[in-house]
Length: 123
Length: 406
Figure 1: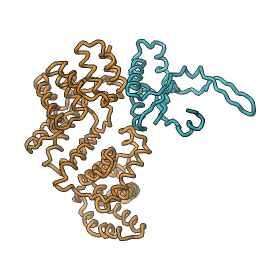
Figure 2: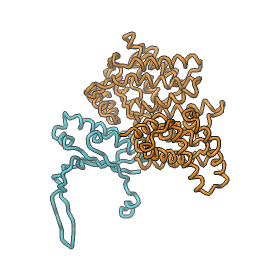
Figure 3: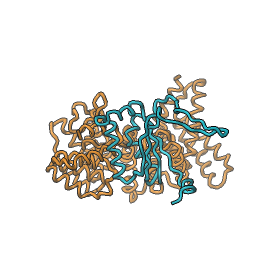
Figure 4: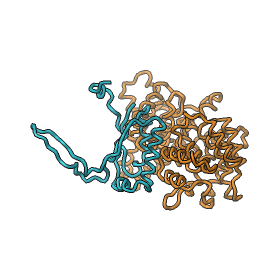
């Protein structure tokens, strides 16, 4: 089963990227990533730049709406995502609990919709 | 909260499990008994403030719950199966209820039902926590890292299974007792969860229902005082619990056992643990939990002697691994052997463990990292620490390992 972990991080968590060499949060992430890969659970994923860099596009009544943001002032923001391949939700939650972000922000675990994916992805 | 509210709360804390076990026993319908008891508690909250708290609150609740169960059974158009139930509820049951506080304690029976081999092993502990201790599904789900709705559904299904499979609310026959008791003890230990704190940097990631587990162990010990393993388990948990306050600094940092201030250990808990272990030994049948308790007894002896007899601990682990070769016991044996007979001996024991079994087993990597660091193997030590850190859930333990890695 494939799952995605949507990783919500706090401003200090995101701040830690500025001096990654000495930050325990970043060090914990490096170790976490190695453990995920070594256990064969890691499929993919990436950290995201902060919310201020986001741009949202909508098409309404034939017109394109492009805007900065979302602007919602949130204590936690989506800081990255990881795709897991594990036997069960229990295993995915186990990995989520080990994620360094859970101690500060939150990690949302969602199963990947494999049936729907198969409809439009040729393999 | 008013007096009636406080009384209800006190009765729930002291007697929920006894009331539920009693109500569940003959109907075998735990869910119905829970509903009936819940309704009885609700009506107590409304009628006691007006009419006053009854002289025997437990008897009052038992009678009220019994009426609900009778109503339920009637509503289900009494078929054959339910006639027995009705006869029971209206007959002997009523007599017992009148006796008030003296109604029989059937909690041990209920625990054996919860840990019955027909019930999925992963649900043994949650069922015990819900039925005997009255913990709600959300709290249990939290402890076991399972979504609350999922936990709720699993518990409902398990209770239906108890009813439909006709699992008897009785203590097992003597021939079945050892095996059935193992399952009960395993499930109680499953709630405990402080883990093996004797190896530095081992993640305590586990339910952390220590008080609840100790409480459940006491319930079983009361009923089966001549079973040495239940006393062994109780002793084991009390020994570990005695060190609870010493495991963290006031600002929340992790303190490994070897660096704990033995003055901060709880002397009464240790005394009680020693007494339980002594009673168990007197019964003359050694077992896994007694061995584990004996290991903890050696550890806490440091409070008296000022040093740790690692050679004795290594010997106990050797016996334990022969009796119950769990991953946890084998890793802890390696750590103890390294202390007693040198790092190389400890690493050799770790190397003998199947690699695929330990891919996500944090204690293995924490102990391996520690031993590699002692042996001065700079090439592998960082990689082992990384694995341990990456598999750790507890932030304080993670920080400890990060500091150790340097």
